[in-house]
Image 1 (cartoon, rainbow, N blue to C red):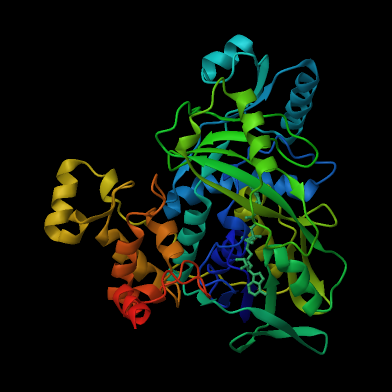
Image 2 (image 1 turned 90 degrees about the vertical axis):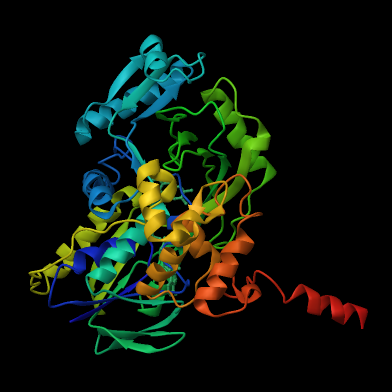
Length: 493
Ligand SMILES: Cc1cc2nc3c(=O)[nH]c(=O)nc-3n(C[C@H](O)[C@H](O)[C@H](O)COP(=O)(O)OP(=O)(O)OC[C@H]3O[C@@H](n4cnc5c(N)ncnc54)[C@H](O)[C@@H]3O)c2cc1C
């Protein structure tokens, strides 16, 4: 039995990981991007939500999957060596109206059986998180909240899937779904035709387009943009807890958090865009000012603006129905929608994968593999080692001693390791972004001004292409245009 998953985001990959446990299923993952996790998965707040903000009356499935997904992440981060922090989160109230909101979420916590959620008076609030603005009057503390590195999570799951014989077809856009006798029988991509018995639509913002290819047209996806400000790891104040303003019906509020990478993240906004704006990733002056205003409420003072290393935006794939759309179709048989996976989709992803396998199991007998590989290790980072271990490693492999990224202390060996791992999961084009997400070169204060050229020379050497032909993120996003001296000669001539 061949299963094709459209979408190598956190959802498609989580489904693939669950399916890779069975011996009578051959799993294929297709994505139009050259690498995994480059859709919605790469730009979000990264919170593993405790699920006290999910209303079980309005979204029962979403609440269930969020709760279960949260607990699965505890296991997955350990099994797959995914960077994570579990400091807990606090919703902060500044007036009586916001205290009502806190009480509402406390009641949801009780109903959803989220452990340890409690109200904090001003004194408790400031003793648990002294960096909160002293004008706050109350907090709702949820100790089980965490944060992961979402793109590292996608990469880790993909590597584990490859170890368990999942096939990846990256850089291929699905342009049609083939239906015969009211059954799905395959897909057509920009490169090939694939025969599949089951097709799973985990295409994020574009899931509605894939559904329409299968003849299903009862929902659409519209983007809800979230903008962010990212400060360098040296920025202070940086709260230990994840803190945020009170949620609204549209969003969970503006967060201020220390990321797994020790940077300070502020965001997101929540701006509904029309369905044709699925590439609208620009940040705006209004959006950034809105974030600064809200963050200034949460912290008594913000770090200086010259420590901002990046502003960016992500797009939530909002379903027109308001709820996650997860269903096994009888007509066409074998087509599965996993659509509209908006927030808390990152949290829910491992549970969504499990749920999809349960749906398949209702139709097909699944036989567990005897030898399924549960564990995966991340790239060894020289900067995280003590002096003795560093020396041992450098003696064994001197390229660990050649530091390419000065901001983040990334060595040449780590970049070469990333290239090898990319090849292993079927990445055909080694991009600068692919290296950046795996090694965190180009992530620091200089954002690659110093190390990008060195990284491109390493890629050039290992892949055998000219440095200027390397792209940032595939397509026409070339790093350069040619050899400087020959271009100069052209000008003189
Ligand atoms: C601003 C923001 C904040 C968020 N914060 C949180 C949070 O803190 N916690 C949380 O739990 N959730 C959060 N989320 C939600 C979470 O990020 C998403 O639910 C999750 O990433 C969705 O993953 P996905 O795999 O469904 O989508 P994607 O990551 O977009 O994956 C879909 C993939 O399908 C591919 N694809 C699309 N069309 C085609 C095609 N025709 N052919 C081949 N491939 C195709 C795309 O290239 C993409 O890689 C947030 C989202 C946003 C935008």
